[in-house]
Image (tube, rainbow, N blue to C red; front, side, top):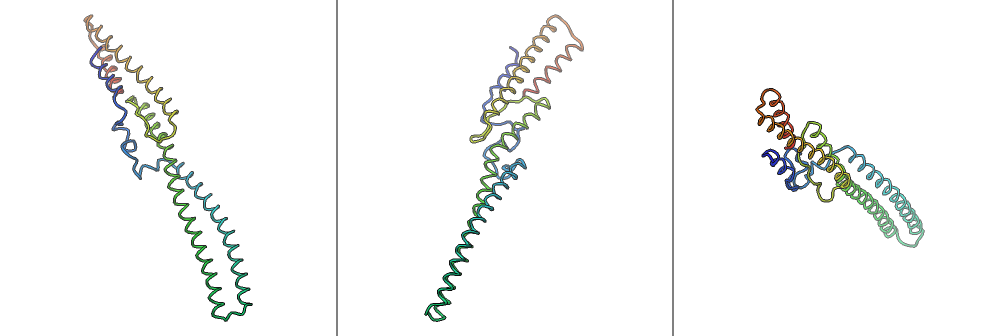
Length: 217
């Protein structure tokens, strides 16, 4: 086997832990905050979740506040018809209205916190789908440009694992076929040189062989 084919085999058997430099910063190390938003789909999906949570929280808050306000009005009527002095009546009524305001602030605060949590969760969970799709599209772009470098594993927790494995199988089949073509070209060139042939045909075969070797790196 030639030195070139040996080098190609070593590249094909490279460890999966270190992604290629050309794959981009999105595939290296831990996820960075700026890399979580890879597609507008993430924003649309997250916006839907947040809007639904706001609608549900608002509806529930309206019902709770309505009941609380009715209770406060009932207490106010009863207190005003009681034998208590005006200062005591005012204190009791004010305490109920203060309770209503606190309840309203609590509902608004809960809704805001829930929306922020769901927004963050939505972006993170959609990134586990958008990330693999972005990675696959990058490999497709490289294949279109004639680059068949090794394909590396998705990160732990990413979705679309089965789809990615199918893509990897296809990519490896194309890569293996290219490696075989390199070996065949090397044998053909060696045979022509042994036969004493020379000229443009051998140079063309060498150029084709080099192009296919470069595509494997």
